[in-house]
Length: 87
Image 1 (cartoon, helix red, strand yellow):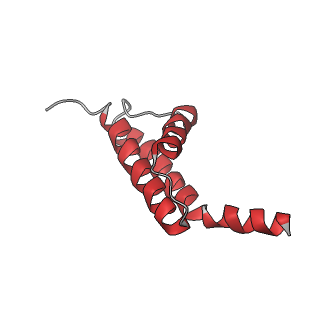
Image 2 (cartoon, helix red, strand yellow):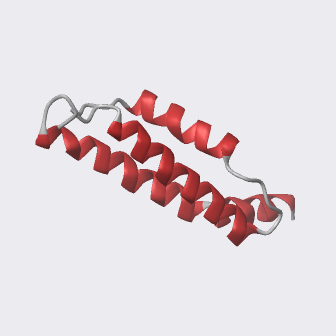
């Protein structure tokens, strides 16, 4: 039973993991625009971990997922903008 509960809970967070994967590959593709936009997996994982820890907690999983994905999207956007040259 415990293993099934853990599996169910883990599967519930897959949308956040999928969003993280999409955002990582978007950052990786930015290097094709300009070589200045090169981001490592290690640095992305720091942003991901920060997003998990700073997102608003909530006992209701769909709300928690929205909070995580919103924080992750905003943090990755801000992280990507740090390399954007001023115009």
